[in-house]
Length: 387
Image 1 (cartoon, rainbow, N blue to C red):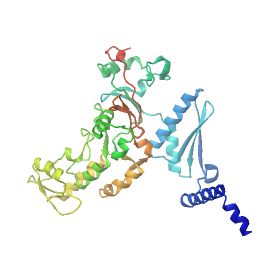
Image 2 (cartoon, one colour):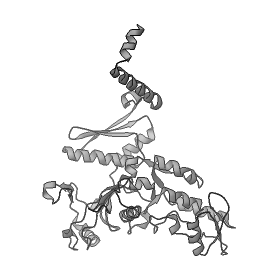
Image 3 (cartoon, rainbow, N blue to C red):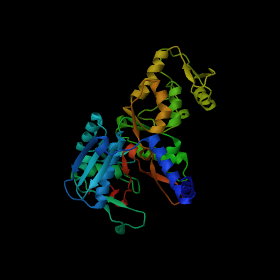
Image 4 (spheres, rainbow, N blue to C red):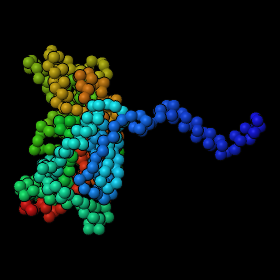
């Protein structure tokens, strides 16, 4: 018996098979078995489209649904198509709140906005139903180009013409369910994943251009790098986390004096040389408290804490990835803030359109921000004539 087993396991193929079996057992032990809803329980929500669609259109519907659901933090949700008209959404587990939220999102029409250079050119109710379609590749010059055609209502014509006037070759940022009064926090690595060889400054500028909404500052979408977020809170709100007029920036770039009843000079304790220089030039006194985290030395600590809390409470949620949340949630909790929407790594990462030299032209797609695409405006529609 022993000789027989020895002979079997001396075979190279058997050794490889044994290793595979052991690795599989270890994986199951560490992560558990993933059962479908037939075994683990869950809810399957059927959806029937109002008309039959081709494969490309069905893929678009599935992807839009996935992005809508994941953007609201619903990660354990699957969307699958069945034929040319039917699809269904699977919600694992028995969380009634998640099921109700999925049903609400499916039943509610998404909020569409098309933005050019910070101005809303088209809203969802200004599009004529079923008028949006992509132009086939053989009708567009160049191998990598594509076009999107749509028809707007006559009443919306002047608004669109005014918004795009003189904006030939500008991107038209097409948003669905663009987060309102929200903050996106991502790491530098997440921001640059698909930036090619572009610099962080180019990526920040592209994000700033894509997320501007000059017409509705109260609906601002703030984007912050994770390191900057931590530094802002550590400075006890002497550096604003955000604001309707504040864009993507480094914490050293803006410093504001806390609102106190005492107009005498305040003091910031910090070990950061760059911040020291910036703060000193703003007329504030800098001192070192010998600690790792800087704090504001002021006679009115209540006013300071209120300023920090207000800066965060102005946002309905912080959209971030799981790994970035783990970096910032502790310091956010210091100010009693815990309203996070966690999206997957793919959704938190912006996709860029680049030119031949590798420089970023614009953000082309960003699920976390609700950005579906950013087609370039044809010069023919930017001459100021409705129609």
